[in-house]
Image 1 (cartoon, rainbow, N blue to C red):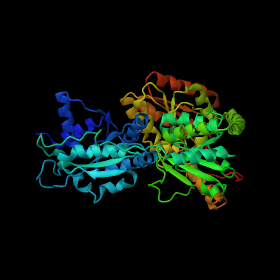
Image 2: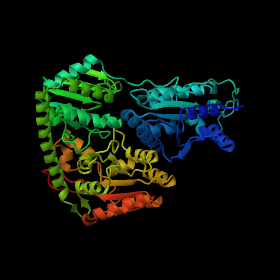
Image 3: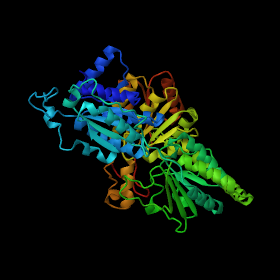
Image 4: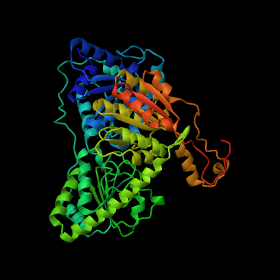
Length: 581
């Protein structure tokens, strides 16, 4: 008779899962055996991607899901694998990406009473009281498979919840005895993913749209702030259309996706706080943190409209931003409604004022571009390259269709300002606080879009969290050539910056010791070479474009590349005498 693992696989296939991203353990023996039986019988299985670390597996599944909109399945090992997966699940929860993590459970029987009983030391020590608590803050749904008879119902339910708006990860535990247990072939029930499918967000009410349109018609200084509206490629064009129609300045704060083309005249950059005090009508469109309240002066008379797939921010204990009118809906639908309403209500005077604002925005945009160009002029010195210069060279050498995954942290503005992006889906940023995001995401994007170049730009501190050996091994094993650019300043600049913001002239400043320096002689290019990828250490400002070109040539010829760039190292704070580290 078939085992529960058989019904589980049938459910996964029914949900149209393309890939199983696997980091397997002793708990998966029944699943591994069942997959082998399927292969022997010529049955269709999802493709298997074996990842040496769970961080790679979960982020890779997330990258694929972000590109396709279809949640994938990750298999991890009991509590240990769940713990390793938790950081990535944190990021996917903040990015609202659907992924189903299936974790084994240590066997619960000890004397051979059931197939799959404990037969190894680890089966006793990997059985915590509450395994799901490790990831419960980061998943929308969690459950345990108690019988193969309900395997299809549980998997379809997990898929429906994780694909419902706002989307997010789900977690299912699989005890080994349950996976191994046999079931009557006719005892399982069919659960169609379409009949038991997800619930998607809709549009706004006509009254709400009319109210927003009236306020836009009267606004003198409207501002739209967004971060992840661009997860739907259609929304990018709608934001641009609304901005041009109504004369709305558009800012991105810590963008998770490209939300407006960088060459659009209404694009106002990444520092929304500088406009908050003059804004009379604000639109918060799919954004978790529009500015930092501590350092932002808001106009107390401004009217703020929030349009968001997750308007209440249900996973945030506090949310410190105004919302005079909150609309939880699909932003693409709402923006379409709003554009149609404005076109119907607009007057010649409105069009004149809107066009005048667009001209102002265009001049401001040109000024920012000139400033960015000046920042990139100085190449830096040997071993101390200017990250703006390096990123500008990348921007010149890649195409508009190439996908940039940004995890440069303190050098994020160098990436955003120097690498122009215009195509929807061509930029993805870190949504959460879990470093090590960009590597697996880059692999998942490449898996989903094999015809596109994928470039991961990451700081040295963040690259350690990417589990570099796992990253380069998977890239080579599955022929997923990506370019990784490591901007190495020799430490955690964010740690130093946070300390200085709190204690600008404290003891850490006095001693120039922020406990944030990392190994000064690390050569990440050798990590790439160890896996058979192309690796290069860049220290000379005269070799920037040539080194980038060599790496891109390797990628274009099917080989991953890693460029380790030594940028200006962490130095003493401004106005501080040089001291020994």
